[in-house]
Image (cartoon, rainbow, N blue to C red; front, top):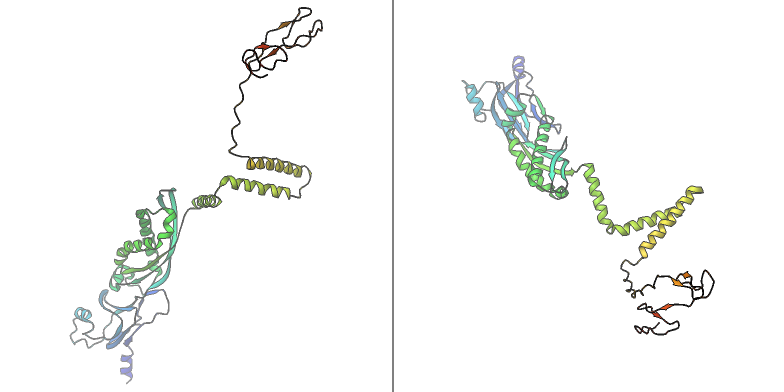
Length: 357
């Protein structure tokens, strides 16, 4: 019995694996130097696949279920080994369990800004981030192209490759869609769907598939965001002239409530008073004042020639009431206010044009 127990101890009769982490993609079953017993039970759970590799060559792939290892269940390995005894003896093979479940909440983001030509802002740089999920849909291709003969393979091994492929696909989607920067937020789902369709053929060659992609945010450069904030503020304010007057009134109110003293306070008060006077003069002035009535035609200018004194004959100004030489009172010369004709003092009407004086 001791010899039989020793022999049985070198054989494996049950093969199974349960995942204790959320990141393991491939786990190599530890044979510990033993061989697999003929008729051994293989248990493959849901979201798993078991891959048998014989001498470096992929032999058989088993999906979820319970299997008794025999020639009927392992046709490829049976053909490779050419068993002489009907597959009755133990055999040694490497067994890999591949996790085919979805790996969720994987984060992605642009490590560097993506250049884009926008119709409104010109050349701008965009940053984006979000989450995605993926899974292994072809264990055979995944073994050949990615994990090879690794005893343990986690999502960290493919995370970088998928992220960079995603960013490249999203950049192409934004550029080809020509969606304005201000409208990107309304098209996140469409951009994600376009990116998935572009990325999945590339990942299929690795035995992977992208199950979901969520674009959480596409952000603009800080300078563009500030310009957008200013434009939004202008739209909210509306009438900039009224807003400027309101701001001036608020500034003057704060200046009036200022407790400052001395020359500085006096200067603020004088400046506020002057600004207030100017502002209210502009605010309450009628911007459409009626035009002033047309002025009456000006009377012809009185003759500018000099006159002679009636007493001494000296030359005196025509409008002089007294002679500057002898002091004699001069006769007053009156002219018509309409035609300028000389008329007698006290005349009520012009004898030339008839205008009332």
